[in-house]
Image (cartoon, rainbow, N blue to C red; front, top):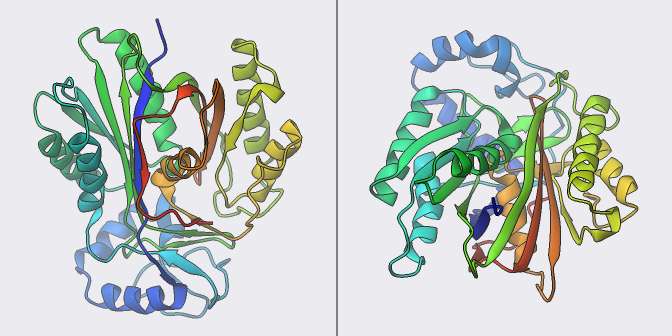
Length: 353
């Protein structure tokens, strides 16, 4: 089977605001939040307690204690915050953009996958249902959650498999969105601050003359880690897993390291970026910012859109996309393009690192 093709990429990153301004906004949101959150959060605390907002010495508003290794307030740090739309609004925004620019007479979208990080299954069902309504019949919608930045890689793997298993499926839309809101914190440990963003990919069955990024390979692996520690040098198992996946892809497709034209990775865990940098012997593989704004499930799609906006596809162009989830998921995708997708739009082209 000819590999499926990513024919459209779009992303949205809202304006960034200083982190202290967000913490002031968050304290108001927490004070006016629904009291039912307390019981709900306690039920999830064994696995997700570290996401709760708790600056050192600050009151936790009745919530259980959380991981204390949080960064000090940094007046220079800014984080993208969406104030005009909720999570479903962000997802619908990018889904509508892709659908609105498709050529007249294009086949309808058969499947919609919604990627996000919230552990609330009601959010999954609600947003997936809205996306199904936005796209229109005959699409079937579901969600991929709790894998953080690795979610789009799982969705790409599912899309590739579904196009093999379901002969009638032709077009799949992957939408990723993040909107951080109390009781979940934007601050994760000493090195990551979560921002709001959304992105979408359109995957189609390849045909004669189909332009875009061929999905040569994609995989996700789970590596048990201590998710409360994300400082440089800690996730050795992540590094081994990521480099092993990369080498396996290259060997399976008969490629050498020098035949990869572009490497697009995630910030936040410097040891991962450094390892990829050293593995390829290249500077473009390295993410330079140790303290990073991470866009969760939307991160890889945003960075892919950024990359496509500045790459000239004058020949066969191969891209390696890699990312991670804070709970230990590692994702990698190998893409090949002869021409760019017809849409690779990013509303806010500024770096999110």
